[in-house]
Amino acid sequence: MQTSEFCLLVCLTAVMSSAQFEERRAKLQLKSDGRIYEGDEVSLHCQLDGNAVGWTYEIYKRESTYQYFYKVHTESTLTFSSVTHSQRGQYRCRAGKGEVYSKYSEYVWLEVSERGAKLQLKSDGPIYEGDEVSLDCQLDGNPVGWTYEIYKWGLTYPYLYKKQTESTLTFSSVTHSQRGQYQCGGVKGGVYSTYSNDVWLEVLAPPNLPNKPILIVLPSALVCEGDTVTLRCLSKSKVTGTQLTYRFYKDETPVGQETKQNKFTVQSAQQSDTGRYWCEVKEEGKETEKKESDSKPLTVKERFSKPTLSVLPSVSVWEGETVTLRCLSKSEVTGTQLRYKFCRDETPLSEETQQNEFTVESVHQKQTGKYWCEVKEEGKETEKKQSDSLQLTIKAMYVTLSASPSTSVKVGDSINLTCTWEGNMSSTLIFSFLRNNETVKSSSDSAVFSINQADKIHSGSYMCAVESSGRRQTYSNEIEIEVKESPLTIVYLSVGLGLGFLILVLLLLLLFACRKTRGLPSIRSSKTGRKEKGEDVITPSEGANQMDPSNKEGDSAVEFNNDVVYSNLVKGKLMKKREKMPEESTEVLYSDIKLKNATGASATADSSSLYASIR
Image 1 (cartoon, rainbow, N blue to C red):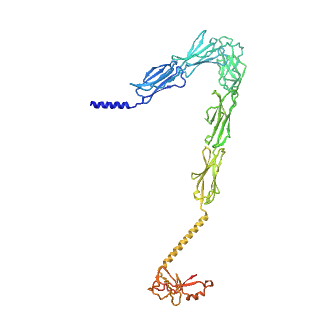
Image 2 (image 1 turned 180 degrees about the horizontal axis):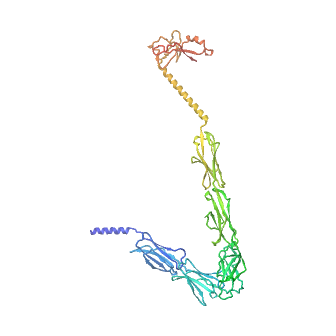
Image 3 (image 1 turned 120 degrees about the vertical axis):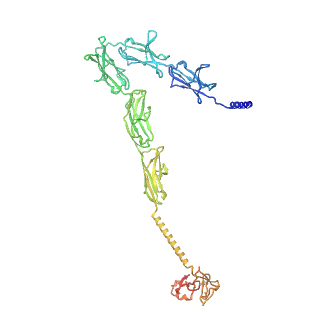
């Protein structure tokens, strides 16, 4: 037993040592959307080959000359909920299970950028005491969950002026004491952004105003479409603590409600905003004390003209043609870049582009509709203008097939099938002819299919198709072609059948006659001639011989044969008959055929003779 166990152990060791196991590999992935700033959430995911159940993951971070154990955990993903600049660097991972470890992954670089801040002053022109003004703090990236800090400089250093979750600090009625230098920053947990740039807020004392208010138009009395226009009404109360209210008018129409704010803003001026503006001031609660400013003109010129759409070659085209849409608009401001978009009905045909043309190749009937274009200034979403719509009609190509001279012809005749179409095709056309839905001819050279000698096989249902290169086929109507037999052919056939039938009848009659005469005897003479009573006898083989009528059946010279009939040629007895024949018949030899049966008796009681002329 010990020997057997030892052999088994040796065999298992040999097998295990010879077996090859593939080492499990690891791959580290950085999961983030775009650039990573301090305070963002970012993940490192360690992925193993195969089914990694029960493995422990090890994350390593590399310094300049070495790497160290950064984190060990059972989850394959390491998440930094608010990553810091100190966590930037190179990372890699591996996994272990018991004494087995995977390969190390490749290094992944985690770049963490400092989050910057930018402060902006939102105001239209000079700021006077009592005006509304805003400071807006903007942070890089996507600052979700951040808190904003506004700082104001003192004599030597900034101090925290306001801390809030909104990015904008608004002074609803600014005072002279709020003038000064400001900056901002953001904070999330223990992570801070950089400090912003400095912004100076200047607050002016109201000017020495007359009893009559003054209207100021900012930035100027001439602006372009899409610009922001601010109307400011300046007035000074001579009684301390008096609250004034303001109202603005365009021509004779109020453009806003009565308010304690001395300004009115037009966010995106349009040409319809052109007119003369003025303001009205009164003491709050007193309707009788009102003062009006002088009117000031405001002119809003268009930044670009209303576009005009044109369709080339025309608004009515054939299927398969190429249509070009052209959108024309004139920019009134130097350096303005326009962008164009084309639409059919309510469906966009293109993205916004700097090209003012859009081409539709190989149009079809489904593209019939109302087309229009839209123009806007690049970078400004509010300024858009649309052209008037144009109705584009796309007509289907109309194809017809005709036959000449007729759709019904005789065998051997010629016939021409002509394919005609309606449509202005600039490209090469391909004409196809089909018989019983199978193509019999396809050509770009001719729209005619000719059959020089029609036959029965040319009968069938025909149609043609017209196709321009790279476009679909348009089919014609169907016509039935019938190829008939010629009447003369029918006559010839009838005559032939009649003659054949007649010949067959004659052959049958001849066969019947031959069978009727088979019972009659035949007389075959011997080669030696014989004479009887001075009468010459002519045999079929040697001419005149005498035949003895008294020959009996047993005579060796004469044998009877039922298959042959011989005649007795008696010249002496026929002389009197010759005298009655015409002159040209004197050279004719007549024979008197006497039919006898096999016993020698006459075959018939009729004494009449049957004559045959031998020339």
